[in-house]
Length: 328
Image (cartoon, rainbow, N blue to C red; front, side, top):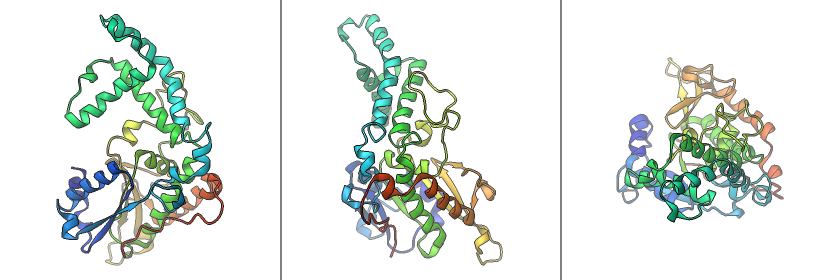
């Protein structure tokens, strides 16, 4: 369905020649890419030779040439306090504030046979609502919990992504900048590089890109979202930025009227899950877009702010850069 919607919106940009798509080496990611391509092209796109799906290994040896920088950033993997595992730790702290009362309620409602329910048991029950609904179209688990309890679950999901690979993680910006920089190079070159680039990875790899873009950051709660209570004024909401099938689309807009596109007539717009989100201090173009020259300055400035990938991640030697994003 997403591929069909994408075709409806960007049909005029569909490549006339064989095109490449990229997916990280996880079966569910590969399946997502294949289903998307079936909607965008047709159900036998791979046999027809319309497109080629290139699989990018999720291995540490890839260095910076990866779709999954969380698997190649050494310090992020090894730092038990602020690295990858911090998201699960912070979520666990928040579960302690709300899950026990749910367990008590469920046992008191003539469910003594349930026995002892851990905080993780409660959270897993809540997760079943979303996963079953996605697969079956409905789930009886959705009716088990109250609206307030669902608010707590929403915040618990926000915390794990915020601290695992979002604005609350000190490594996220440098990891996300790799992809931002590669995308900026393509946008600068324009149609001569290709008309469409489609890549598929995990939600945990989308989150760092959002950090690199410096959007949806919780400056009101900076530097941390609390784990003792819900921050109702937060900007970071997983349901908005990382839903099932979440996506970020960079649009290159050519707005010249003379038939010749000048540099000053090119703008960049960020579309997150079918909603336009403006970049910080750069939305003077049409439809809240950012002039290309300013966008490129923004990308360079963000590297200075988030740090060099190899340095931040504690990697020695030449870790390279993203090289596979090309249509030749």
